[in-house]
Length: 357
Image (tube, rainbow, N blue to C red; front, side, top):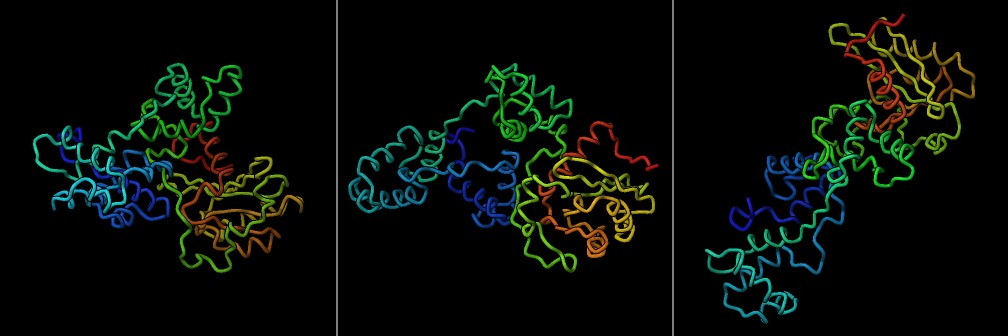
């Protein structure tokens, strides 16, 4: 409902405070509590934006009146102070206060006096400068992106391929972030929300990246990814691997281990017919890795799954350094995540693993 005739909306600066808390690593509940709104209200803001944080510059500029100043204007005006007195009290120009008080003439016609909440809602409404999303206005580009999403291409792949397939037509170029935002933030228009099922994560909401937990080590002797040498990140030297497990159905209890080399994307599978306990995974991994030349056994990056509880034994047997990702941070093993998703998509995996031969 238009803020002029219904209940005033929450001030933009309050909403910006919620997103600042999310950006700082707070949960939705903690961020809502910090700014004094209900969890359901904060959850609605989160879902409306698909978990995508607004830009840092989304807050109001310093030259604009904030909600606290508007509340002060309301109090001082109710006391009978004139425009110049109110301006002096706030350190603002008298013309600014005069314009602000005139908002009541077109904003709250059926009430007497100035109200900070309705004035703030009106200011927020007038400050919006929505720019039409490229995928909402460019029909050919939208169709091209939708078709490629349905073919299980990732937004990153689509963005790169469009530049190569249409080198002389910048109107057919789009960044992967624009694709993600058009999927997650429905207010931007363009792509339909159901296409999020074609993403390799299958998520309809973006999961904010939080700061690493400060909890104690999951396993003794863990070395975190923050201590991994820069040589690993630049992919210039082969021999650095990422790994994980692909799980089958609950009934079968099946699993396959994956090892992907970061520089070449060469992939090896670990046969785990007896289960996925730490001992079984360690034996399979050692048997697979020790056959590699020494210069291809530099490091391994894994998540904090219990299957790697025997990491010290693996490191000693293979002479590899093992690094652990932060909790709930699959992007820190992006090479493995992407490779596994491509394999699953190519094979049309239905959720059940065929036992390895």
